[in-house]
Amino acid sequence: MHRIKLSQKIIIAGGLVCLLTAAVLVYLFFNPVTQTELISDVSSGKTAYLYDTNAAEKALPAWLKIYFTSPPEKMGKGVNQVVLPYINGAKNSIDVTSFDLNLPEAVNALAAASRRGIKVRVVYDGENGNLELQNESTQNQKFETIKVLKSAGVGLVNGGRSNGLMHDKFMIIDGKTLFVGSWNLSYNDTYRNNNNLLRITNTQIIKNYQAKFNELFIDQRFGVNGELKVPQALIKIGDTRVENYFSPNDRVMDKIIEAVISARQSVHFLIFTYTDENLARAMIGRAKAGVDVAGVIES
Image (cartoon, rainbow, N blue to C red; front, side, top):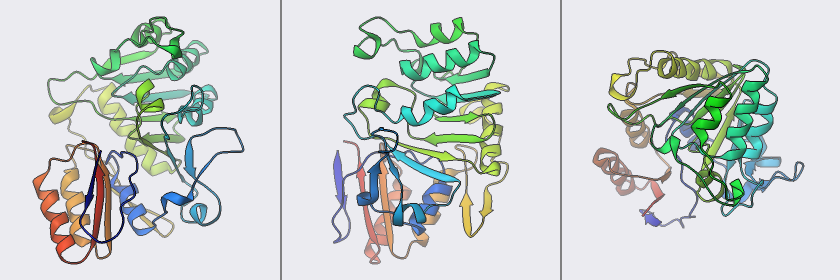
């Protein structure tokens, strides 16, 4: 993992974030919460880290919660423990997109929900989403995700790879709760990798993601063949302005570069893969102008 320093401020190495929703990025840029304000959810005995209580809680609106993995996690103590009660408590529907997909606790919970009559639909990557798992989490028995889901009657769509990756990672439960972030429903993303997870309850944001899910699952349009632009990109929630986009149709990188160019105080980033030269030039330009630009990228 590399540390990049373009200013005099000390860089704190953190986890990896996927730039899925510029909405959350913009909100956090203008409402910063420091790493020291992350605490364990002691009320439930879970070790997933989240923004909670006091100053950190006040910095976030009621419709948004933020969680981070904290590897290495112990079995049964991962960020999935935040999501499982929502899966188990679903009343009508669960829609899932996940690039990697082999976390036994989550897969078995989805299968159980389907068996009790919940409409469960999953969009996955045919390669990464169909990898077998055999380790302590499966009692060293071979675990085959797609086989488990098919046997439970879960609706499945393979995102394929001919027109770009189906790289989305989100879950909509009963049309009322959205989980989205860099976290896949996978063993590695839960217990080994740094990831973030957002829980969102705002109706319009959820509608945006539901429209995207429908394009993937029903229309089966992926990558450059996708046609949907986000139904409502700009959303005003109380005093908070939210921007929500999907790639490639919404030209997400252009929006991020615009946000960087407009920065006057700081640009902080955590990125797994960083290859866009225009974004780099924008960040370097801001750093030369005296803006605090700092980030962490994977080696």
